Image 1 (cartoon, rainbow, N blue to C red):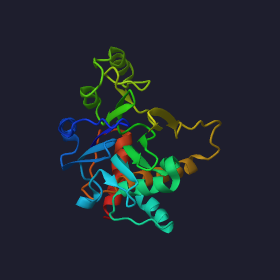
Image 2 (image 1 turned 90 degrees about the vertical axis):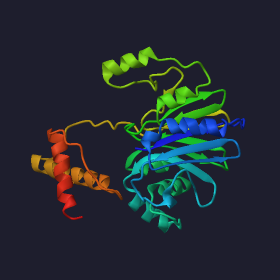
Image 3 (image 1 turned 120 degrees about the vertical axis):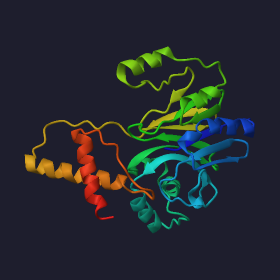
Image 4 (image 1 turned 90 degrees about the horizontal axis):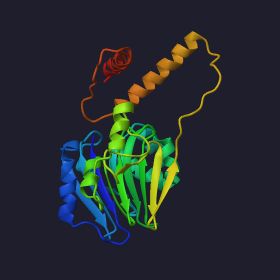
Length: 284
């Protein structure tokens, strides 16, 4: 869990730096290892509170510029298949300075644009700035595991991992959104891109929000697939398929440069996952 914060002001009216740092400090608990801020031409500023998981070196600190100096990214989450993607990108001539998945996102975007996100296996929320096209992309993973909230007013954008950070700096008089609170009490989630605060919204799961020329463009890159008909596989084949999926999923999620653990509730699902983890841990 890391904390991201950023602002986009095409009118070049960014917040005073000390004010921005005070907002970043609100979510310090999300990333106790390091805090950092980077900006460009009074138009974009990104801040990051880091919890180190992959590549613990200073070279993997965020926000990160691409080697070309064209792209700037701030990223919360983990791209589990970054090793495989890195190998593919190296074949296209891309070079990497560290072993982080963040650099892989930058290279993948340079190669495939937003279509790259459909290749990712993982959980994420990130902001990626294209300094050439003056284009900002906010992206959230398929199921919305990693949070991302924003306020877009008069062409100016503030976004963060936590809604109260955005609310703290809202350009309008932000109050509680009782409709969203009722939704949460009823459905255990807030729907329709709302949050607990009026004028603070969340990026929908499986969605990119693109900001360019003071306009907002919504781009859905993933929908829950529709499955019709019944499988013709027999029970043994289905069990084999399930075992392969569980094995692959757990193996991806055990990639880390820090010790890995699990919260075990005692139910069938968590017990199956920890059993898979225990098998793989013996090989470490």
